[in-house]
Image (tube, rainbow, N blue to C red; front, side, top):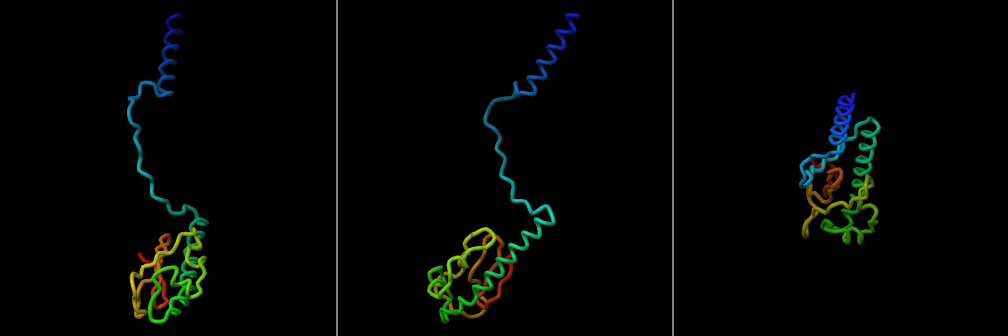
Length: 136
């Protein structure tokens, strides 16, 4: 009887040691790389993401009127657009508040299809001719 009791006690001690992690090699913990953001998994999540991208596209299209207020030269900064009467809240993505990136470097004439602004979240680009499209 004592032998079966001691075998059960030994088995219980081994199980407890395995469950609590005793006997694991010590050292630096393994750090996993962060996972990339996942696409929305539900129909609702996909619809909301598409809605935020559409809001961003519409806001960029609304900015096109300010592109032509500077005459022949394209704006290169927020300061240039503010001089045209553009409000600061128009220069951020309505989806998450990220600032639009200015793609114009230096003085560029307003001619043709020159990329002016880009949304880093949705990868949308606003061009000098007033059109906007996905930068992908």
